Length: 81
Image (cartoon, rainbow, N blue to C red; front, side):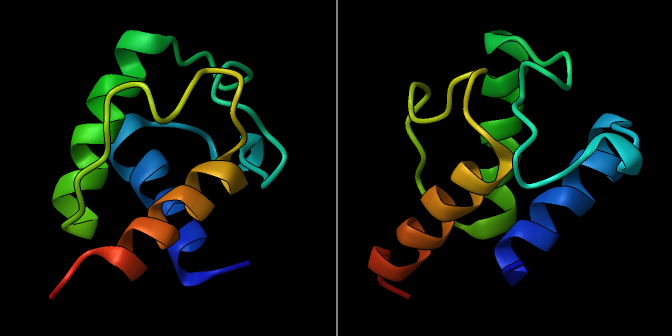
């Protein structure tokens, strides 16, 4: 997987106590018991960690971790340094 995916996995494990064995690219946030309020907190962490602006509705509980990594990677590409 990508560096962005690996960083997201690290954030989930370290900041949100998600078990590494539960995480896979195809796992949805819903499967990890993350509701929409939890995702807002996660998006704030993403913004801080990756220095990008991510809207509150850009990641949904039914999205996969791979989809979130793709979204963040795309934001990194278009965000000026």
